[in-house]
Image 1 (cartoon, rainbow, N blue to C red):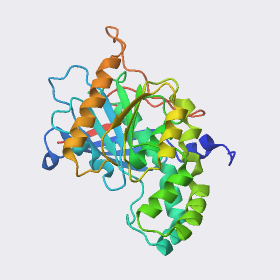
Image 2: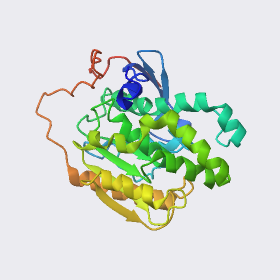
Image 3: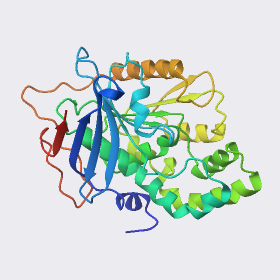
Length: 313
């Protein structure tokens, strides 16, 4: 592996899905399931699936990664009026969400591994979704929100399943973003700057500007707040400049919060309208779904809907 090749570093943390375990979760709502995706290397990904209403013909499937505080429950934040299948994957990080400077430094190795796995977690979710019978594999959209935006772009290096990309509150320049994030949490600038530089040296393969070329084949939607208190405007502008063909939408307000159901409903409606306008290639009669992509040097997994899938009701 070339340590200076970001794609090689990310692929070291990726293995294609070998099995999907699905369990109905009526306590979370109708049409909701808990998923456990088991990769060929033994890694596991927790996810929550919410199926689109049966009245929606050929719905899109959104494979989502949001902020640390939402994780796999991001699919449950979508309004009941949503017309997409939603599969939200959980972050590999299972430690505390609030860390003091001393705790942050002491946990850097664990933070590094979790961060570098984040792209593979999202890619695994996309590959797993493409296997199940209720998913139209020509309508899979990767969604990265806030902290999930950099892994969403990087995941395009690991899978070719997605047919579209939506980045919500996304930005580029990880070093500046980490520094701004630490200062937003109350760190003094004198500590935030060197810590951010150290952290960037560990997670640089996720830098969005390194992966925008992988999005060139896809329609891309970028949605940001006009007054985001977490993201430096220069970082937002850098991401937009690196995706010149993207559709750009601005909304009033700051950084999206899980406790803003009305705003989430408006953003969901806007994104779904954009997806409907894209359409999708017709499915020839009798044609099967395309097999999920596999990294170079590995065999593509069986794409039959029933293969490797266990459902508990």
